[in-house]
Image (cartoon, rainbow, N blue to C red; front, side):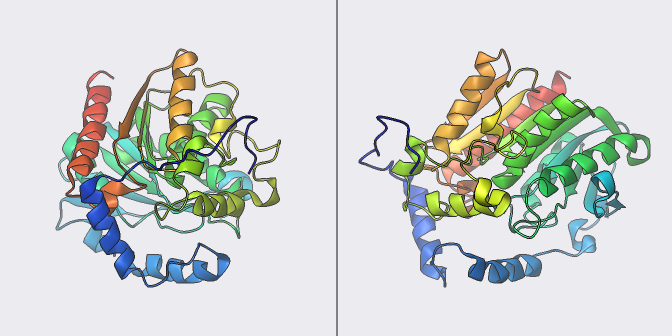
Length: 333
């Protein structure tokens, strides 16, 4: 288990929010395959993801957005990377950018799915949404994912004029594994150069490959994204290196020894998530390094609760908090 000396498993899990419990039980009842995540399930999940990809014309939402999908050079001769660029109709020139990195445990997901909320946010703030498609693990282990996200960001900054965006007002955002890559991208830009990010909006990111926090143990088997699924995600990315002494910070941001000079950071997580304590620790270390971070812990929230139950009270509150943070960030920069 890789526990610290004296660490014990909390005896009682955190109860789920009542509205989420109803939605989550209904979801489980409809789930045909509740077996643990495995390589055998991977092709099925990817097939489902592919089926959910919208046509570019549909992503325009009846003309509310102009949409195109360039392929841009990969880093150091790697394959080209697809970017989805969505700009609200009538948005002003020199717009801010929401640079979005999709979730999916590093092993699934697509940059053209689950975009309704972030498109609405982009429209609200007159921002261009740019969603990056990165190579998936385990076929493409670390550092393929962060290299693709970094290469896409460099291309966006270099082509700011033709995109009509302000390269000094780029906010990286991501959910789950996308939040991991967002945090890793902020570290990469700080250390290796590139456009300085205006902010990082990280929603329930996976930050620590060691997977042995008190909350990981406390909430194991309580919800779908538990300790075993978290382990599968990290092993897909890192292979046998997972949990070992040599995992780099650009793979697992919790491994960073220095969190100074990062952009303003928004972090949120549910109190009933296995990821809770590593996210709390990351925010605390940003503060200790003299940085700026806003942290929300949603009572009874599970992983992706606002996606599973978007009409629940805490889901609406979480979306509002993210937009309030973004509104303040853009208004003051």
